[in-house]
Image 1 (cartoon, rainbow, N blue to C red):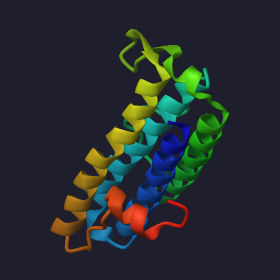
Image 2: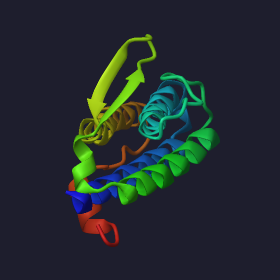
Image 3: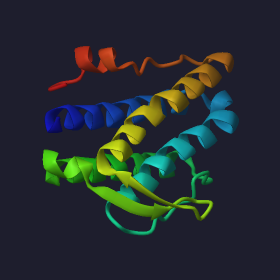
Length: 154
């Protein structure tokens, strides 16, 4: 399970960076797509903050530039690599207590949080790809199988 999670977070980082690069190459898509990417990265950041028992620095829907998205993507990738690297399989059922952005208190197992992060990204990357394509840019493929075929040590 830990090897699988490490692979999925390498995939997540890879897909975030491919999306960022495609978006940089499609300025006509920025107005609609940058807020989606900022949200995706902020959500990753917020969940990471919860796992690390700290307050997040960004709201769920922040206003970020592409350079700020790039920095947050790198921070998230490093943070998840560290968190997953420290966890043992027996810790995946441990629960994290947190408050949502609406102030609701929840308790969620670590594995469910990690699964949320892994599965939330493809939804918004697909939205971004569609915006890029509609704006005349080249929508990038961020499918997992592409990562598995192309990325070193996938």
